[in-house]
Length: 259
Length: 322
Image 1 (cartoon, rainbow over the protein chains, first blue to last red):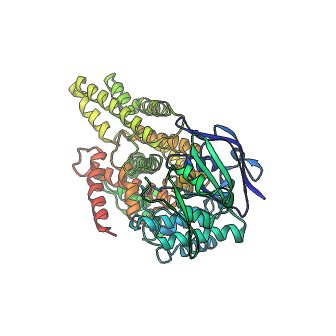
Image 2 (cartoon, each protein chain N blue to C red; image 1 turned 45 degrees about the vertical axis):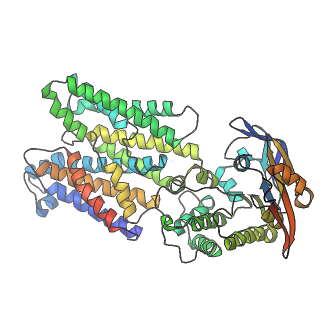
């Protein structure tokens, strides 16, 4: 079943074209990687798909309904986003921060009940933050803050997860932990993922589809096996990329010394 | 302190500060007299002193404190800036220019109500129109516009003070520092405070999220444009009501929300009512000191709010080094 469909999508920011005539069909169970060099508009595209900013052309539908016609809270139950960066101008505890994920599920005057709290605690546990509940967020390290942001998204529990560089700031173990978890959500619970990644090996290992943004509006979308090739990647990054075979599958690495 | 316990403690403090303020003054009145008047059995003097003189002023003080603390909490969320206060966007400055001009023209007392309120509303519209060039709510642009407009008003205030006759200067200074001696009927302000608190509580969970940024709020289904407009208009009206009643009482709107956060309540569903209670109690206590400390001379209440609030805030800030 199709969760999100973009037709003839055109997105531009500050006079720069991110994509034009882009058709995307995101189905339940699918895991999409968005690849592209810095400034190619990966975040802008994600923000457009999330409904944060208007598209310059084409249309986006979520479960068959135009994205703009959704009531914001209802939309947030289906579609969630992990941002690239979080600001915390005011103090708050770890548990309070995870609990804001329940906001779209609650009525105006409703308070979080024990189920909501249990859900937040479970999400914190999954991100190895059990025992951190009463810590203030200002005392967290960059990686811990990132894991808390992921836990908040898990507490929100949307069907389509837009992930802007989900592995930023995470140590290698927690990178794998997070990507494994997202993959499970897609395969076992029929949710869908679109994630911006810079590591091609992770993209190939954890995703089944790829969208490449070349800049200047040119895009390429398709199954990982079809489009993740040394030729396409070299064109994408303007640098030769090598595919190696490792003990656990293929490994992609930039050619060293070729710059 | 557990947030709900904090709310109850502050409620008790609010009641105590109000009772204390009513009993203290040039003629101290004990519990017996207060009880007698409450049961309509007091002497005519006691009755007049409490019902016509002290109680309206104490209620006005509480309303001013509550309005400013609520407005300050909302402005801090709207601007995502812990340094924001109700006056940061120039609302009190606009009111002050209108009031001082009215004083120059010979108006005084309740005649200053309309100039104060119109000056505040004019500033609200001016800053709103000027800051929305891009059509969206950009906290930085709003803050810059407001601060610049406020500086403009400050220059005009300086100009008016310079050209005013000496006889008017003292009244003008009292108004600028906040003074409750000429507070009129406090009931409209109490009504505004009640409705404002109720509206703010209705969006309190949304405020928790908007405080963490526009994108996070949008991602969790908060209609950020509508919410920002509501906060802006509400905070402006609350500030305008407070300034109309008592001039620009400083410090309360900036410090009270932080005091409550330092005491452990960061959730706006608790933070908002706690701020109203503490803001109200602080101004009631300050006004009691202002009218009794150097009696029969009265001091501007704004001086005392700062003198009480500064040590309180510094103590709490240093106590917490988690």
